[in-house]
Every structure is written in structure tokens, then in C-alpha cells.
Picture (cartoon, rainbow, N blue to C red):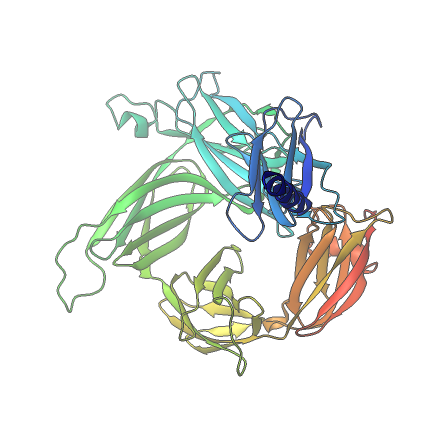
Length: 541
């Protein structure tokens, strides 16, 4: 009997082992291409958050698991920082899934990890003396979803030796630096003490030591690199900006001064908190309270944007005005106004059923900032605090896309953008369509499937499937088996693949060299087209 039980146990073990597949590889330092010792490795199912396997590599950076067939997310790196498998540049939002199963060679995976780096430096004045409490703004520039995007990543202040350091920075990324500060003898620092020297401020400086943000140069931080950026600040006559405003009782917010910065960002100059007393207001009184005053000191010459933002009882208020400072004190009057609203109604196709909740979004035409809210069960949505401007409004969900947009009240619609005036509730009607299909396939370079290739699907010129003639440009990085899949509105598309995840495919000029060599695909509603596409060589100028 014992022998029978052992035989059955062995058979069960063999059956179980046959359902597992080897997953192994090496974690490599992307900068040196050498093994990364003691790397942390995590495997998660692509469709879930439960950890499937994990380990810490030895000195050789190698790992090995036995996993069931499926699609997995592979994360690896240091204890504090991990990246996704297939990442070519940190911050790109691209990665590749590891496809495990019969016929898949997942025993020789190479994971390139961009070791974090740092940027350090020292800031001095005209005499070479350290500048304490200088403010350094760090801007990161990366290509996200086919478009180069710059955004403020962090701030640091110098210590008493004038030194600063930004640590744990992802390598393989471009960084800009902007510096502002006040001399120790400025009136702002001495609080108008008797005998204080003439008021002065430091002119903003951008790397590499220029006062012109358009001439700023990024630091291309390599994997594991510690770059150095020193600055010399020059004192210039400063000014004080007195801001007079009225605001609702109880408002909490900020008032800030910015100027045009590097790579389309705003350079920060000064900011301070606002707190409006909760004074008594009669029921029939004006919405604003008595006039208040705020003072911004030690402002160097320049062209600025003065912005006040605040909220009370869930309602946002704001005001923005340009200010020119030339060394003389200035007074600015702000009319703080409540933000507008966008309210919408969603119309589904007859008998359509949503498998997942629909999501409404607004995207600023200038800032590119995106806000999202869930569509309510009754088909309505609302964005309660919207600054005046032009926005692209859309509703999407699994198997649905925006096919029609109409402004019913409060605003206008031009070129697919909703114009939102001040102090207005804009009501829109959004029609969604379920005429969606898929295209999936493999990228092959002639020697086999290519993992980590960038596949781009683009609207055929002249085809309109979204309101305002908005074209469709989407990117997909192939999985470990070279596969890709797109879900798009029915229609004709161009499809190509390149070994360049940094391609700015949202920029028409970047697509020109490839579209003439692209293949065409017809996507039909409810159907899946299959394609095997070649890897195109790099474009030549």
C-alpha cells in the first residue's frame, strides 16, 4: 500500500512539474552591462496584484523560477527602486510583459536596470562666498506616450556651505536645473533692520550658468552617474509686489509668482500661504469680503505670472495676471473669481452594456494636464473646478470611445475643443460608440520575434473617427514573445515597428519617415485582425 501511495505521489508531482516552465535570466547594470549583484526580483501576474515569485540575486545577478503559463510583470532593481522589464528609458511608461508557456524561451531573459544617480553642486555669489538657502528646481524631461514632457520633479535648498544634492535620480533621463535666491543682506532676510544694505535679489540662473531659460542645457544623467552642476549668482536690484484682493470668508490657498522656465515649464520665484479670516457676512452681501493685502518681497527684474488659488467649502477660486518688474515696487489688484464647471451627459449606443465603468476626462489644450472622473450610474459626470480655457473632453471605457461631442450650454465648441469662459457652467453631451475592434500580431526582424520593439498605429490621413478630426496615434512596446495588441475604433490604420521606444510618435514630423513604409490594416468592429510586421530600420535624415 505504501508503494502505491509513493507511486501516485510521484505521478502527481510529475504532472504538476509539467505545468511549470523555467523563467530565468540576469539583472544587468544598464550603464556598464555587467551583472547587478543582490538585485531584488519580483514577478506578478499581469492581470493581478498577488506576488507570484520573488528572490534576491547573488553576485552574478542571476535569478531562476518555475512558473505556470501566463503573462507576468517582472520588476527588479535595488531595495528602494525597481523598474519594469523591457524599460529602455526610465519614466517612459513603457515595459514588456514576460509571456510564459509552451514554445516560449524565457530561460535567458536580460533585464537592464538603470541604476539611480545623483546631481550635486555648490552655489556661490559674485565674491565666491556660499549662498545659503538658495532654491534649486529640478525639472525632468522624458518621452511619455510618444510626446516629450517636462515637469518639475523636486526642489532642494542649499546648506550653509552653499551645497545641494538630488539623490535617487533615475538614470538615462534628461534633467534641467533652475536656481533662485536672496542675498543674506537683502531686506527680506534682515527684516528691514536698521542699516540694512540696498534691497537686492539674485537673478534666476539656469544650467549651465545662464540667465536665459531658452539657452538652458539639460544634464543627460547616465545610469549610476553622479553629475555636478555649480552656479554663480549675481545680485540685481529687487522690488516688492503688493497684491490687493478680495476673497470669500474662510478661503485657504496660495499666492505665487512664476516666470517662463525651461522646456515649457514655469520657473518658481516665490510663494506664500493665504488664509482669509472667517468674518461675518450678511446673507445679501456681495460674494467677496473686504479688501486684503499680500506682499511679495525681493523680486528681481523680469516678466512674471502672478497667480492666486484658493478654496472654501469645496469651491475653488482663482485669478491670474501678468506682472512686469523692473526694479521699482509694483501694486497689483486681483479680482478673485470662482472657477467654472463642466457638466456632461453620456449617450450609449442602443442596447449597449458597459463591462467596466466609463471614465470622463478633460485635457487642457495648453497645459496638457488631464483630469478624470468616473461617469455616474445615470450617465452624468461633473468637473466642478475648471479654470477658463480650451479643453478636450472625452469619455472612454473598455470597448467604448468618444464618437460625438456637443456643447449644449455655457460654452462653445471649435476644432473638437470646448471653450470654457469665466464664471460659467458648461454643459456638454458626449456620444460614445462600441464600434471597436482589435489588431494583434508579432514583430519579426527576419530572425524571429522581437521583444521590446515599439509598434505605432496611426490614423490614415483624412480619416476622422473622433470629434474635431482628432487623429489617433498610439504606441505599444512588444512583449517578451514579440507580440502586440491594439483596441481601436473601426477604420483604416497605418502600422509600423521600430527599435526606438523614444520615438515621439505624437509629433507629425517624427512620423513622416515611417508612414510611407508602414503597412495598412483594416479594423472592423467586434473583430480581430492579425498582422506580422517587420522591424523598420532607423530613419535617415
